[in-house]
Image (cartoon, rainbow, N blue to C red; front, side, top):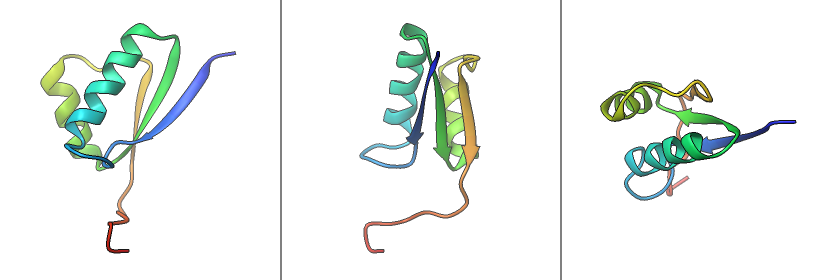
Length: 70
C-alpha cells in the first residue's frame, strides 16, 4: 500500500516556495504520493521553476484561503 500525503502549499513561512521545494525533495526520495493544495497557478509556477513535475505529485486548486486573522 502506498502512502499519500496532502500538504497545504500556501501555509507557513516563504510559501509556496519552501513547501513546494520540500515536496519535490520528498517525492524524489520516498515512495509516496503528494497532493499539494492551494493556489494552483503559484504552485505550478514554483514546480516549473525547479524542473519537470514528478508523477507522484498532484496539485489541487483551493480558491479560499484561511488567513491568520480568520
